[in-house]
Amino acid sequence: MPKIRIGLIGYGGIGRVHAAAYRAIPFHYGLPADSIQIAGVATSRAETAARAAKEIGCDFHSADYHELLARADIDAVDICTPNNSHHAIVAAAAAAGKHIYCEKPLAMNVVEAESMAQAVHSAGVKAQMTFNFRFFPAILRARQLVDAGFLGRVFSFRGRYHRSSYISSEKPMSWRLRRAITGGGALFDLGSHILDLLYCLLGDFAEVNATLDTLIKERPSAAGAAEKTPVDVDDIALLQARLADGALGTVEISRMGTGATNDLTFEIFGDRGAIRWALDDPAWLYAFDLRDADSPLGGERGFRKIEAVGRFAGGKAPDPSMTPDFMRVHAECQYQFIRSIWDDKPTSPSFDDGLHIQRIMDAAERSSKRGAWVRLNDD
Ligand SMILES: NC(=O)c1ccc[n+]([C@@H]2O[C@H](COP(=O)([O-])OP(=O)(O)OC[C@H]3O[C@@H](n4cnc5c(N)ncnc54)[C@H](O)[C@@H]3O)[C@@H](O)[C@H]2O)c1
Image 1 (cartoon, rainbow, N blue to C red):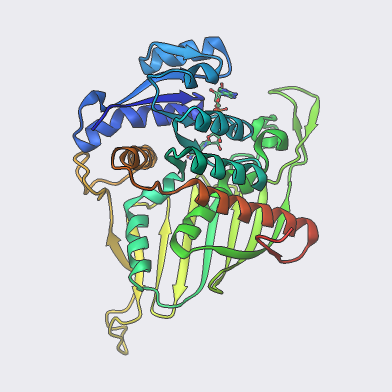
Image 2 (cartoon, rainbow, N blue to C red; image 1 turned 30 degrees about the vertical axis):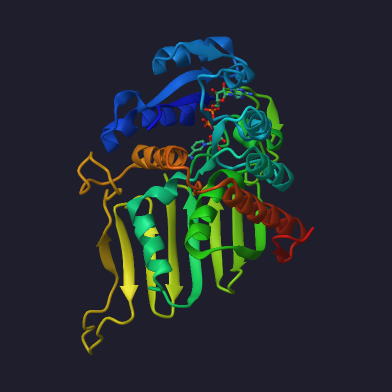
């Protein structure tokens, strides 16, 4: 397998996680240490780029990602920058013939996302989204069960992603609260994750009826500042959704869930069975099988805890009985991207998947403005 040399673009909160995960992949899969290398890093400022290169242990750093793209010793770029830069970086990286790994949400809007999906198809490069939560073994097991017909006809579903990250009105403005940089608020930031989990398990969404709101409408312009700046993105989004196959569900997304750290969970109800999963108990998939024997005292019926734990296919360490964590599933998501380059196979989740999520979020915003159900592909 040829060495894969990564150019990391953006080295903030998640860039550091990706960097650590690349370094961990050889340990997880028993690969040579130099099979995956971060060969260069670009951030928005020369000092932060130089500091990032020191932490990562790479020689090349720049405040201009075009310099990274111009290098022959970069095979793939990993985009860990705020949402408003994803489109331009993807366009330039595809034109430079680099494989692309891009953080969620794919883009600021559907128009950008469509052009990004088109650009990577035309360039013939591998392109994958970071929808890391898909890679918990319990989710991979849930997909197997759904594909095998375990649920039967899906009646309905419930998804939720609550965090409490913005409950203080003293929390100052940041890029995540500015539409011009994010494209959307909690819906884009947290919603893209829970919507992708439901989509990867259940398939395409057809229409949504959503209400979005901004609960704290202005915040200090900077930490401790008296001056306030208006917040122009949602911090809560409540969706009803109908899937292409007719199943109906609700999805709650909020940054204002007091007491919630990372409360991401879903339940899916079918005519043969049901499944549940929660991010704060990620080792287990809960599954109910209606074919289990019933009796006056309950027989063998009930939700069963399926032992998915850390069973990553081909994983060498940690022992597969260990509980998986945030960093481990980022490593898995990145490893699958690299495998798609090594094995020349399609990526998953692809940019087309990212585009579908963008369409759902766009329909939710339009629905909230109109106060009506909106179909994904209508104007
Ligand atoms: N999948 C996940 O678990 C997860 C978690 C957090 C963030 N994210 C996503 O990752 C992205 C980055 O979020 P973050 O929290 O790391 O942001 P951050 O603000 O912590 O870091 C952003 C980084 O991007 C750099 N940057 C900004 N503009 C740039 C440009 N034009 N060229 C080069 N570098 C540039 C900054 O210098 C900084 O290093 C966002 O799209 C966000 O939605 C995903």
